[in-house]
Length: 141
Image 1 (cartoon, rainbow, N blue to C red):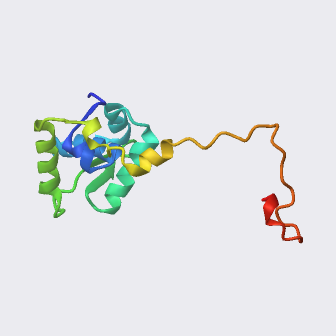
Image 2 (cartoon, helix red, strand yellow):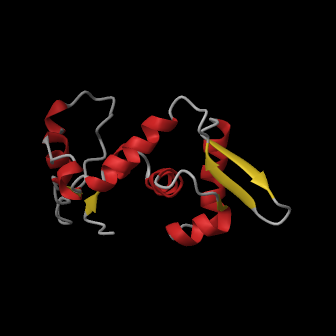
Image 3 (cartoon, rainbow, N blue to C red):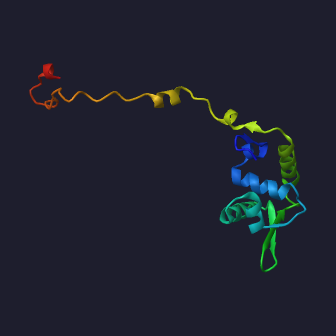
């Protein structure tokens, strides 16, 4: 997968969620265990486990354990099941979008951030330490 182009799924969802959703919802009949998902996605096992915990909390995926592995699969009874399958399917078939087109163009704020601060005063200029003097002599300022 090219990092300069993104699928619809990668634009709609955070990178980790997009990868996990793609793996689970592209072949919804398959059950996958955590380490398998981590190896297939290239993600850290803890990252995958955390994402699966979130998807389980939303009841988008179901899980079961055989005592050694915990298997996850899409929850076919969830109202979003068919829509998520469709999003994954369309995302894989659609052309990828250039990453550069997704970034905000530099505007006025970005230009202001690039402005340089003024150079420091020359060292030979005497410092006026009488800024707050009681005399009220404004000529010194």
